[in-house]
Image 1 (cartoon, helix red, strand yellow):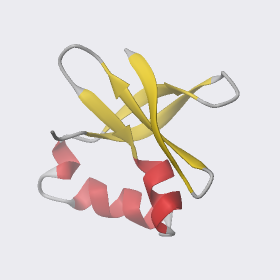
Image 2: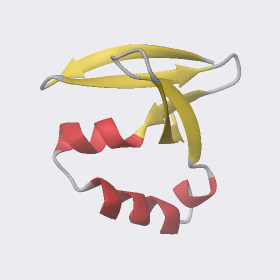
Image 3: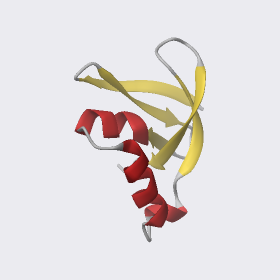
Length: 77
């Protein structure tokens, strides 16, 4: 899987982790960009009838070059 920086919004990098079969968007940076509370959004995603079944932990490479596990949701084209 490859990590790609797709945008920098308000100094926060939005990343997509992609393989040949899927694209995953890290949830925490999206929450930071939107100014919403990450822990509460995580809870809402887990309980959501659709997203609850598709959220995954994925490995992303941070801007410091270190790999981190992040909650991700599938990207839709």
